[in-house]
Every structure is written in C-alpha cells, then in structure tokens.
Image (cartoon, rainbow, N blue to C red; front, side):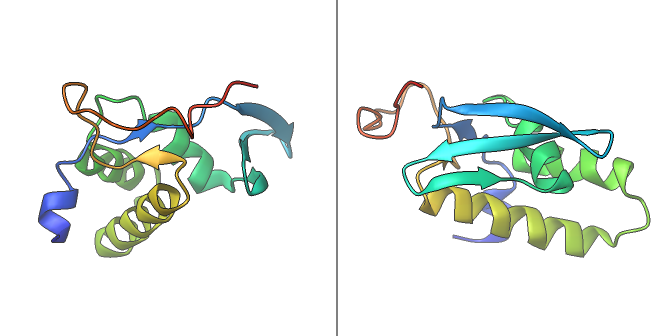
Length: 112
C-alpha cells in the first residue's frame, strides 16, 4: 500500500464512545476504547473532527496545511498517515471506508 493510495482513503470513525473536553481554551477529543481512555492532542483532535466518512486523507492533509502553514507539507502528510494507520490498527477507525463494502463492526461498534 503506497502513500498515494492512502491519500484517497476516506476514514470512518469505528468508535462511538468519544467526547469533547475543554482545556487551555481549546476543545480536545477524548476517546474511550477497549484499551482505555485516549486523550488526543490538539492536532489529533483536529484530525478526529475532520473524519466524517466523506473527507479523504488528502483533504485532511490540505486542511491541516492551511491551519499550520509553518509546518512542512511532507511532515504533515507523514504524521497524518502514521496517526490514521495507528488508529486503524487499534480498531478506532476504518482507514478506507466504503459503505458498500461489508465490514465486521459488531465487535468494535460499542455504544457508551
């Protein structure tokens, strides 16, 4: 799987237990996974908010580039891809969501 392929992926939140919390005048995201509570940092929270089943990884990278123009685009791309692949490894997202493709969601699609 190449990075150009991953850029076309449309991530899907495979976790229904998450919330926002306020700290230092910013709204962060807290995930409740089977591995425990995960508090995302500012950039992780922005990425999480951009995951909406329709926005591609490439679009997420472009939006982060607009928000953080001082950071090199290659660095943003590598960090976003690494972050999303880690979330997929943990079962928190499906990196390449296609609503017509069957997925086994019954184990990870837990309700709070």
